[in-house]
Length: 255
Ligand code: 0L1
Ligand code: MG
Image 1 (cartoon, rainbow, N blue to C red):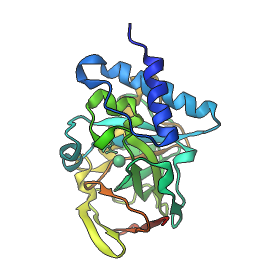
Image 2: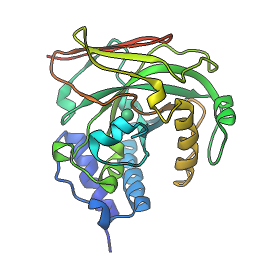
Image 3: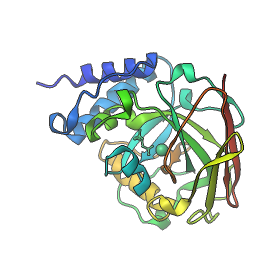
């Protein structure tokens, strides 16, 4: 019998100690439901250590992201308060294995949402939208994983930065994005890369988390997924990202 709790301990310890582990699941050895069960157990371990659930992240919601990691399914993960990096703050790479950063759209929920909903129903449950950056950090050596691995590893959730909030009716369907390292563009894209419109990612989130008996709770943040490929972080780098109509988000990596 598979010991899912053991998988959860391994992946949680890898995240806690920022030590890379070999890819350990593979697609044949664990069903997707089992991988999400491992994810739930590993996040429970964080909660037992005092972290608090603050939302969800959607992953691989754009073609460029799927191609970057060789996994072609939309996935999701759980966010905790310990993953939040203040906008304009400093990130210490010591807590990460090999972090990357990608531009995203964040939704703040005002009403619960779960199951099959339309884009209009999803939007009616939103309190505000914001530009955001996700810091992803696969715990697997060389960012090499199959679908089950990455889902078990909380879909590489490790950090996020949220910029200023805007009214929910703000049009975020196709906004230009320029992500810069030390003032030099490293990724250019559009929010339209996120499933054609980030609201579709919120719809998918409501549907997908319901399968694990979860729902998007009032006050939760939902990251809609990367709009461009993710860029490797390095010590000392200043990361800034301009979002058309939404403003900038930035942070610095400690030396
Ligand atoms: O889009 C994402 O946030 C994907 C996370 C999982 C794959 C990765 O680590 O790049
Ligand atoms: Mg992401």
